[in-house]
Each structure stands twice: as C-alpha cells, then as structure tokens.
Image 1 (cartoon, rainbow, N blue to C red):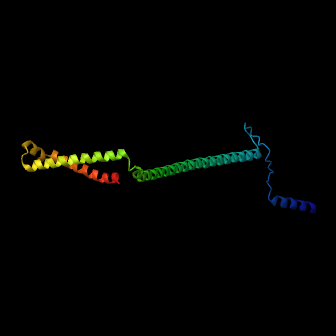
Image 2 (spheres, rainbow, N blue to C red):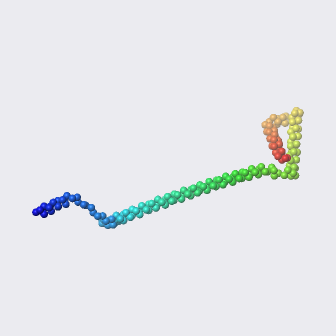
Image 3 (cartoon, rainbow, N blue to C red):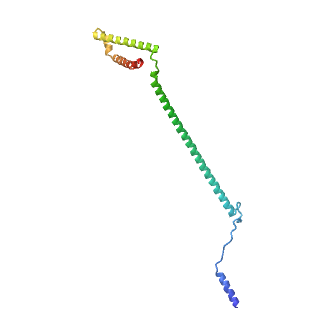
Length: 182
C-alpha cells in the first residue's frame, strides 16, 4: 500500500507541475489551410527581404538620378556663367580697342595731305563768306534803310533761330579747326 500511496503522491505532484504547452514550430512547413497562395514562414521572410532590397534599390536609383540632375544643372549654370564672363571680357576688349583706335585716330591723319589742305582752305573761304554776309546784314540793319519786310523777319523767331544755328556752327568750326590744323 505504501507503494500505492507513493504512486498517488507522485501523480498529484506531477499534476501540480506546470504543463509545458510549447509546441515546436517548423518554419518551413505550410499551415495547410487550403489557401491558394499558402506559404511557409521562411518563404514569407524571404519575400519580405526581397521586397526590402527592391525598395532600397529604387531609393538608391532615385538618389542617383537626383544627383545626376543636380550635376547637369550645375554644369549648365557654370556654362552660362562662363559664357557671360566671356561675353563681358569680349565687350571690355572691344571697348578698349575702340578707345585705342579713337585715341590713335588723330595721329593717323597725315598733316601734309593735299586733300586735307584743300578742305581747310575751302572751310576758311566759306567762313570768310559767311562773316562778310553777316557784316553786310549788320550794316544794312544799322543803316536804317532796310525795308519793313526785312525788319519784320529780323524780329521774328525764325531770325533768332537762324542766329542760334549760325553761332553753334561757328563754335563747332572753332573746336574742330585746331585739331585739323595741328
């Protein structure tokens, strides 16, 4: 009987022990629910990793594309900046060359050129004629023998304009003449 009591105690002690309900999981086994695309956990993990890799590749390619676009834009900007700088340099060199030509142009005139002498003489004769005409007009207007028509013309704005044009012409001739003579 002792054995029997001991056996009962062992059974009771065994019943008091927590039941280990752990089930071994096989990741490669298919659950068998009867679904069309049934996969094991291992296959699901593999597919998840493949999708992650594909997305990472897409991100990398997008980054590369963005970097390439930035580089092309930078190249385009640098090219335009270089073209602008080149254009400005050309303008400055052209301006300098033009200025140099303008400075050296009076020196290039041959002072003993017969055509130039002839033009100077022609200008002087024209000036002398104009001055003599002006003196005649002044003498006619001061003598008082001028007609009413001449006096009305003199008082008009046309006469004033004529005087202004003549004076400006004289001034320009005086300014130009020394450079031609010297």
